[in-house]
Image 1 (cartoon, rainbow, N blue to C red):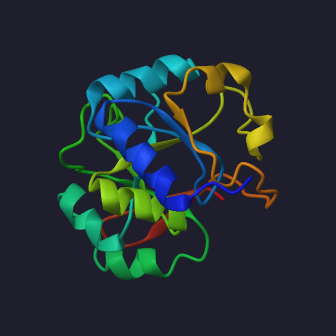
Image 2: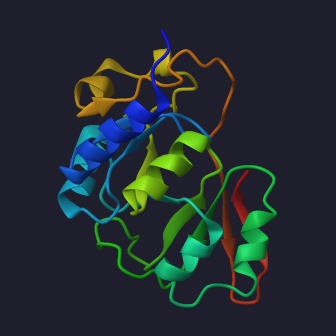
Length: 191
């Protein structure tokens, strides 16, 4: 069945505005998402995933330049660095701005990924706020590769499940995770 891209974006935006939780396709694995600035929605995701509160989540932004709105002291040439990533890459940043403490790690860091997925990019641009992207699994279990592999418990706790790309069989893996120090030196934490 073909689900309208635009209709899916509108439905997601309505749910996010109400503090709801969505299950959606990303440039990596299927994600559980919410408004990354909504404390109550973030708390719901921790509960749904049975995730320890000391484990932060990844936030998605639509464009590399958006980093400048959310990181106080970004590494030099960060926009150029991000635009040259060849695979989906989440970068751990120090000195993040404007995010609730529930999503920021105890050491003040947060992983942010600039998405290249057309659905996610359109959703974030239209919503005009960052969204959470955490894998659609119970904490400690494997991240499901395909929609059909997502646990019923996860699906049952969503306010909206995106229909778009549910039949996709392209293999995707979790994002690469890196840290960039103040000198712009990149350390890969997960490949």
